[in-house]
Image (cartoon, rainbow, N blue to C red; front, side, top):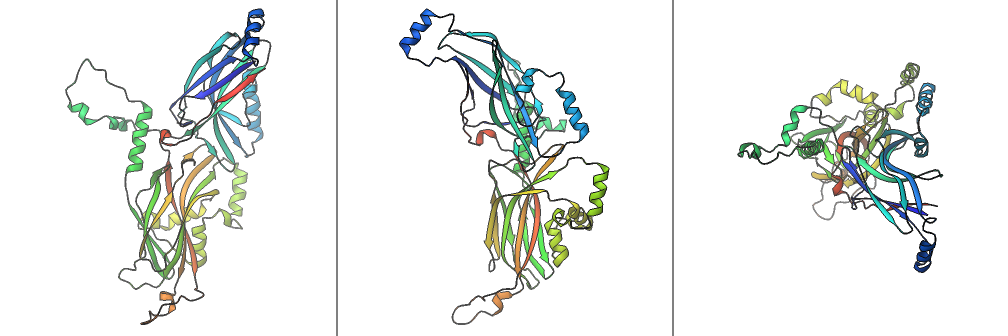
Length: 442
C-alpha cells in the first residue's frame, strides 16, 4: 500500500496571488500496517515481493469553472472537439466543471521503487497564471484552483490527489512608463559599484507597489443628498479604493447650513454589497426581446435608487458635475443590478445628530473586484435613509420637564448606491492554515 502526502510550504496561509509561486512537498511512502517484528521478518523473507513500484508521477495546477449558464449547440460541439485527442490523465483529473487554465505537467519521477517503510520526497513549484480568474464562489458561477498530483502503479489505473488553494487577483500594469516607479531614487544618486549585481524587479513586485499606491491614495469626494423636501445631508468618502481587511470610513454631515432645515434624517443604514453581473454574450434575437420587454415589468433590473427617485421625487445630487448629468442617470437606470450579496451592515439612529461617521469593514474571505468573459463582480455601498418633515418631534422644547417623542412619525425612505473598488490584500496577511492531504493506493 502506497500513501501519498502533499503539503504546501506556506503553512500559515494557503492563499496565493496571481503571478506568485506555489510550492508544495509531496511524499510517497510504502505503508506497511503491521508490528515492527513481523515487518522485519517479512522484509527479510520476501523483500522482492513486498517492494512497491510506481510507473510515473506528475503534478500541475488547474483552474476550474462551474457555472449554471446554458451553453449553445456550437459551444457543445467545440467542447466535444476539444475532448478528441486528450490523454487519459485529462479525463481522470476532470473535476465537476470546465478546465479553463492548466499549467504544463511536471514529471516528478519515472519507475519509482519503494521498500516497505521507505519514503521518497519531491518538491513541486509552479507560478499561478497572471491571466487567470481569482477564486470565487458566486450565485451562478464558481472559479476554484487545485494542484493535481497524478500517479500510476504498474498494471493499475491512474490515481490523483488534489490540493485546493485560494487565488487573489492582482491588477496588471498596462503602462510601461510606470515600471521605473519602484526604483528608489537613493540608488540612482549613490555612486555605482561595478562589483555589485543589480537586482531585477519582478512583475509581481511592480504590481504590489502599484496596488499600494492605488489603495493608499486619498481622494475625498463629497456627495450632496437631497429629496423633494430639501437638503438631507452630505456624505464624504475619503478614498474610492480599498483592500481586503480594511474599513470603509466616511462621514455624514446633517448640518443645514445657511438655509433653514425642512427635512431631518431619522435613521440610516449602510450595506456593503457584492454585485454579480452576467456579461455572457447573447444572441441578437434575445437582445431584441429584452429591449421590447424593458418597458414592461422589468423593475427588478432597474437600480433601486432610480425607482425611488421616479416614484417619490427623491434625488441624490453628486457634487461632481459628471455624476449629476441626466445622461448618467439614464445610463444608471438601464444598468442591471444582477445578483446581490450583503457582506456587512452599519446602522445608526441620527435624529438629533449633526455629524457622524460611517465605518463598514471589508472581510478577508470575500473576493475582490474582477471581470471575466462571463461575469463582472463589483462592490457598492447601499444607503437607506429614513427621513421626516417633523422637526423637533412636532413640539418646541419645553422650559420645564422632558421632551417626549410622539408615538408615530411620518417618514419616507430613500435609497442610494455608491460604487467602490475592492482590491486584494497581501496573502501573507490573511491567516488561513492549510492541512496535509493524503491518498492511499491499495
